[in-house]
Amino acid sequence: MIKFEDVTKVYGDKVVVDKVNLNIKEGECFVLIGPSGSGKTTTMKMINRLISLTDGFIYFKDKLISDYSVYEMRWDMGYVLQQIALFPHMTIRDNIAQVPLMKSWTNEDIDARVDELLKMVNLDPEIYRNRKPDELSGGQRQRVGVVRALAADPPVILMDEPFSALDPITRENLQDDLLRLQAQIKKTIVFVTHDIEEAFKLGDRICLLNEGRVEQVGTPNEFIQHPKNDFVKQFIGDLSGVFLNHFTLGKVAELIGHPTSQTEHLSVVSGDRVVSEIYSEFANNEAVIVQTEHQYWLLSRQDIFNFLSTHGVGEVR
Image (cartoon, rainbow, N blue to C red; front, side, top):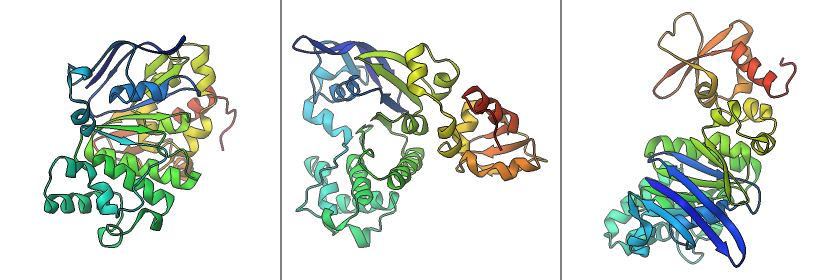
């Protein structure tokens, strides 16, 4: 879907992005993470040409991004910022409608799309479509920002630390909303964050950048099991708290579980639950079956304990 070949960005004598090679797959949530100044936001902004590259090539659908009309290409890439920047004088309906209007959609089609999108993020259209942004909470405005990026049904969504300015509870709720939404819409999402917990929760694959260079690209499991160097190990740190309190069982099962078709004689638990909620299930069972949308997974108590032991937790009660 999106391919980087030796992409470099230089400002004066400072190399911000240094010969980056990436291949972002269609339908995945690809997370760019790294410390401040690592080049993650610059890397993302080069995708839709908000920042021009100095050297190398970026392809979108096997075509150089420079070969696209910049405006049409941006219409095909929804963009969600940390500061959502809704137009304060417009209604929520009109904020969401901006790209469809540019694409000459009819009012009837726009109204139907606005209502559909608001329902997808649990905002009742009858209540919210005619409100102004200052009548919404921060979390509600961010939900509107997400669906505004989806309004014209673009294949790619770029998200630049969209939840980092929110309080922890709202942030976690919006992460859950995004996971649920992505399960429905299967967009290609490029997501920038500095938060390792958020990256591991949301990312199908993660790219860790450091001083403009790629340190590692892989699934959360590959980062856990096979960190490539000391910088990677130091950056991901002790993941036990993340694992227990933030990972859903579905995500955990994908990391360390075992696919199975046998569900008899074991408790079946929803993949939407988090690890810290299931100790009661393990009290009388050595293993449970985790049910996700398309798969059953065998997850043993020992699997979890082994993981926690590996990551510095000596005893789990």
